[in-house]
Amino acid sequence: MKRVVTILILVFIAVAFAGALYYLYSKNQEDPIVYETEQASTQDIVKKTVATGNIVPKEEVLIKPNISGIIDEIYIEAGERVKAGDPIAKIRVIPNVSSLQSAKDAVATAKINLDNEKKNYERQKALFEKGVISANEFQNADVAYKRAEQNYKSAQQNYEIVRTGTTSGLGSAANTLIRSTVEGMVLDVPVKVGNQVIESNNFNDGTTIAVLADVNEMIFEGKVDESEVGKIREDLPLEVTVGAIENKTFDAVLDYIAPKGVEDNGAIQFNIKGTLNKADTTFIRAGLSANASIILARADEVLAIKEALVQFDPKTQEPYVEVETGDQQFERRNIDLGVSDGIYVEVKNGLSKDDRIKVWNQLKPAGFTAN
Image 1 (cartoon, rainbow, N blue to C red):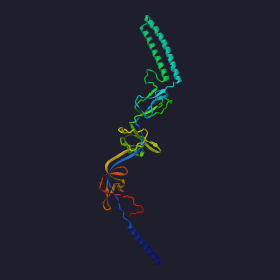
Image 2: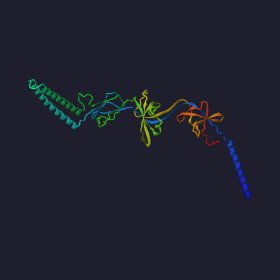
Image 3: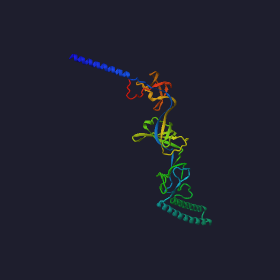
Image 4: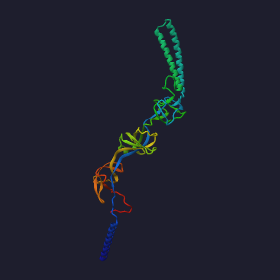
């Protein structure tokens, strides 16, 4: 029995020894790993975040009527340029029956008072000329007659305003002709001939007849996620690209960041605004979708390497690279990093442009096994 066990042990040892020899032989037949190297280059590195939004006018002016009625004529179309004072539309007043009757009654009452004061004035005048009454009494009658004349005239004007929306002597204070209040381009005319409009007053915003804006002063209006809002600040430069305008980038400046975020599809978003450079005369239609790259940091013409070449010390987390000193011989070199765009990173110190850097995480061919 002992002899059988001894033989089995010897056989196992022989097999294990043969297997070890075969493994070492196979390893010796494999090609050794040859690390590739790369060199630093001069790059312009821009660190940025992207916001989506639209191009809109900096200020939009809503033209509203100062009297209610029906649109009788429209003199403009969307896309036209107008100056301050140009006619926009004409309104035909449809008077309120109750207000019209009250104004008509007021005219009749004022006429009765005027006739009465006129008769009294004529009597007082005759008596004054005969020396029966004093000058003071005649003057009182004269004032009362003139006041009655003015009341009658005012009642007639009020009746005309209620009936037609305007009257002589008031200029543009009450007018059925709606005019532009600013110079700019007509963006929208939301009414048509025959539409009823409501006047703008303290209790009602009124009906918008036209939307005007200065298209030479456009802004980018968009949103950024809460994870990015802490990285940005006002006065940062923007690079705006408009989807409808190919191969064109517009310069802008971030001048507004909302102090309060709003929930949008489960995420908190913050509104931002950036004023486009006025020197660019390219016509941009209001409402076009756009993307704005917010420049967080920039480094021009600096020494840079790919971020994939950088390694970090497991204890200190300090960055370093391995620099070739001989044929497939490398040494560790600590470096100071600067601005990164996610692909390239600025090297402030520790490398020269001639150093060859080890590609430590290079891809290996399929089926290749390293030592």
